[in-house]
Structures are given as structure tokens and as C-alpha cells.
Length: 254
Image (cartoon, rainbow, N blue to C red; front, top):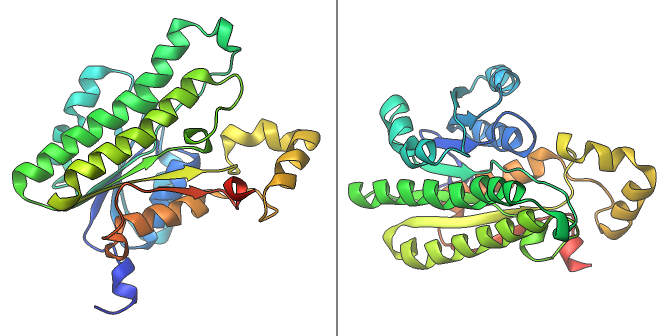
């Protein structure tokens, strides 16, 4: 095996949830550059992602799904496998956040965040793992955790709880499946320049405070996370299991 072939994803078909924008879009493009075929899952339109992939000469298929719906989540892996063919990996990236003082957080905001950020991550991983085990195939799962998988944050109780949950799910599945040829890892993005952080970046005072703590001295970009996902999907990471990799410009080291 040559050095570069350890990073080659040619012939791999990988699912990316939340592929329509931001980090999910970045993951999609990085995976495509490495040679993978990507099946994007999102509730929103993925036309921009599809165009960017087409510009790269890659393969992208869009599938609309609401990951807040339990029935959709439980059947999604089988549905995608039937429609697009055998799946080799999944990036569980889709997520939402609701900001509110903890004493005022509604049950709805708790339930919806946990449903997408944590429950869907486990159920999709479970269904994918079940398929791989039944077929005797290897595969890879990459979950999107957060710096709030390690920290508490403020005014984001359901998000923090769900991202701590993602860290736990990543570790338990790695413990059970590593010896069976299934890699389960997670990425904890730091402050990434996406639509979700536009308001923070527009706030000069807050942005300066954030940059002041980041040793790298810049906001991350979606490809920083995407390239890490491509590595975790590639043969180069075959001996990495149950790890949560901060992609944060050094934030957690500060």
C-alpha cells in the first residue's frame, strides 16, 4: 500500500447527515475529494452541495429526511441501502441547538434537540452496525460531537447534554464493535465559520474574545472538519477507535 492509498476513499459509499450546509457540506466535499461517493441526508435543500460536488466531478445523491421523526430514523439505513447500494460509512453530523436559560428551557426544546443530536445518532449507528455485522463487512462511523462534549457551556442545556451523549455513544459502540471491524469515532468542532456562527462573527467584541482564546488565531472552516472526517473514514485511521478529536485550533489546550 502506498502512502497516499491509505487516504483513498475510491469506491466507498458514505452517508452524511446534515449535508446541505456548513460542516456537513464540508464533510461531503472532503470525502468526495478523497474519492468517495456521498449520499447526503437533510431536511433542507442540498442543491448547493450537489453543485459543488459536480464542480469537483464527484458523485453525490440527495435524500430528504426528517431525523426528528423516529420512524424515519429507524428505517433510514435500510432505505438508503436499497436505493443507493451497500454503505461503507456514515457521518452522523445533523444537529440543532436551542438557547435558553436552563430554568426556562421548554420540554419541546429539550426533546427536539436530544432527538436529532443524540437519539438519531445512536439509532442510525445501531442500524448501520447491525447491517455490517449481519453481512460480515467492515465500516466506519464518524459522529459530530462538540467542545460542549467536554465543557458545560451557558444557556444550551439540551445541546450540552446531547453532545455529552454523543461522546458516550461513540465510546460504547467502539468498545463493542472495534474487534468486529467497525470503527466508531467522533469529531469535536471548535468555532467554525458557518451559517450557525454568523452572528458571533458579526459581533466584533465576542469574535475578538473567541479569537483571543484560540491559539491558531483564526476561526475554523468547514474543510478543517471535513478533512478530519475523510481521514477517519480512510484506511489510515483503521487503528483509531472510540476517539473524540477536537478540531478547534487549540481551544481545548488553552
